[in-house]
Length: 439
Image 1 (cartoon, rainbow, N blue to C red):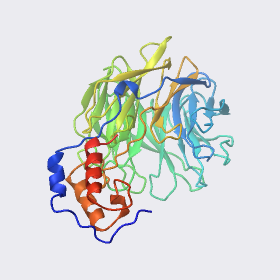
Image 2 (tube, one colour):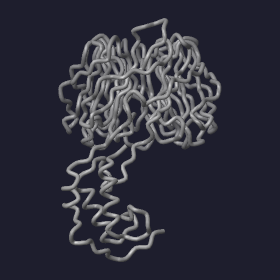
Image 3 (cartoon, rainbow, N blue to C red):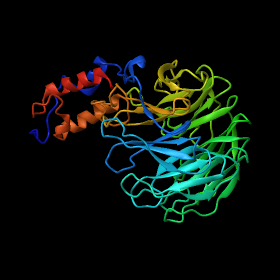
Image 4 (cartoon, helix red, strand yellow):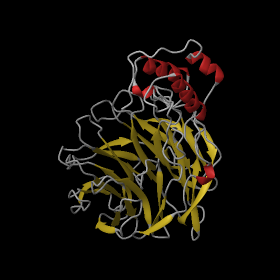
């Protein structure tokens, strides 16, 4: 531990304001957009994989994969070897035409269970974890006509995990509340737009409960259903999207602390971003070109600069290897031109997670005709920002003030030159860290 003195006097000729004048601004720097991901590694899964989810299934601290395989009434579980490589798939039976899968602790025992949307059997399969990454036989719960995707969250605030399901052909959303033991009450239905395709859950109106949003493929909009606080949902409010919105993701895109939406407008060839006004209402959609037929989308910090980027699949070239598009955030909720990375034949969705344990965001992409899942490991490294002492992801005057306070208190965190003492040289070392930015 560094030695410190109770109150280290700052030389009169060195002040935070002087240092700021020496360096008027500092910005987070991500890695080169063309070098974010290593080439794909493909792993065999079941027939016609259409959706992938990432989570720690065997409780060993690393992230595993599960795919919903549209043909064969099967899902594939691929356990992580611990280094971002995966063991051969293990197959589990589910309903007819599984097309969506989600991971969460459904029975409250601390491990990760599975829920699967079965589009042609009009139901949901729940597979409880045995505690070691293997799963008990499915239990089915009724949904409505052609459930397409589902999401897991605590909707009624009782501490357990509930389900929301987008039913494409019945134009509604099913909410299945957890009984507290991994079994579910009968569905409650809420109207949505035409052909709801994707469902996401997040707190849009900042009231502490979980709201539900669906993309409506045939009415070209999204439906926001705000939570009344007890797991019942208010009537939908619609917001215009593009032509044939399919995939959707939820997260803070502009760094203002509230929850925004991104949607893949399949027949417009673009991605729409709907920023939150701060009260659960959404600003008009901004568009970003993606080329032919973007289908699914995920949000995460891909380039290690501290803000949230987009990864998007396209299905325009069946029969040949496809690609995944990456749109990097400029830091304010606007996005740079897409960069593409090769994956397999006809990619159908994308999930973001740390697959190799190095604290950055990797990708998993199922390939419909390839009967495989592509893993693309991130080469950027995690977001780091030594000089961001106030922890807000930006380098500003307040970081200098935080440094000053730490220095005055004799806190070893202010020992930026690592010599065990607090001196002028720590101010200079902090200045250098500030100049270097984040990345």
